[in-house]
Length: 211
Image (cartoon, rainbow, N blue to C red; front, side, top):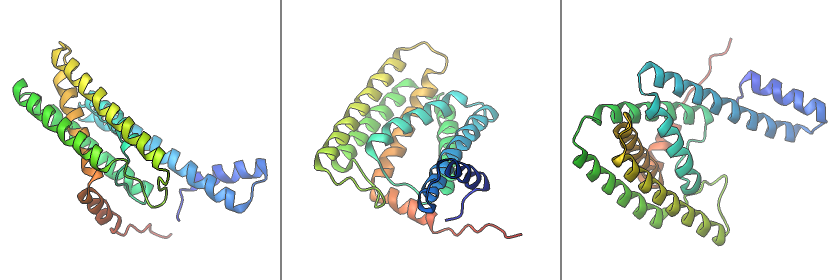
C-alpha cells in the first residue's frame, strides 16, 4: 500500500522512539494515514460548507452519518483516499440538496421523514450490522448489541426530527432535511446496491505520477 510521506515520517519517528518492529511500524503508518486523511477530510468538508454556504448542513451530515454508521456499519471503500473523496462529494451533495429543498412545504418534509425512518428501521432490522471482510463481527452477541444500538440511534434521530419540526430555529428545516438524506445514504450503504456502488468506485484505478 502507498502511504503519504507525512504518515511514513510520523510512523518512523514513533517506531524509532519505541523500538518497534517493521511489522508494527507498518500498522502505525496505516493508523496515522487514516487519522490524517480523516482530519483533512473534515477540514475540507467544513471549508466546502463555508464556500457553498451550507455549513450547518455539512456539520449535521457529519454527525448523523458518523453516529449512525458507527452502529450499523455498511459498505466502505478499501482505500482511505477514495473513501474521503466519496464522502466529500456525497456530503456536499446532501447539504446542497437539503438547502435547496428547505423551501418546500412542511407537510412534504414530514412525509419524507416518515418514509426515511420506516426505510431505515426496516433495513437496520433486516441487515444491520453490516461488517467488512477485513473486520468481521463473528460474535452473535456483539452483532445483537450493534443491531439494538442502531435501533436506539434511529429512534433518537426520530425524536430530534420531531423537535426540529417544532423549532423556530432559522436552520431547522435545512437540518431536518439533511438528517433525512443522511439516514437514506447510510441505509443505502447497508444494501447490496450500496456495496455494488462502492465496489465500482474501488475499481477505478488511481495511479500517482512518478517523478
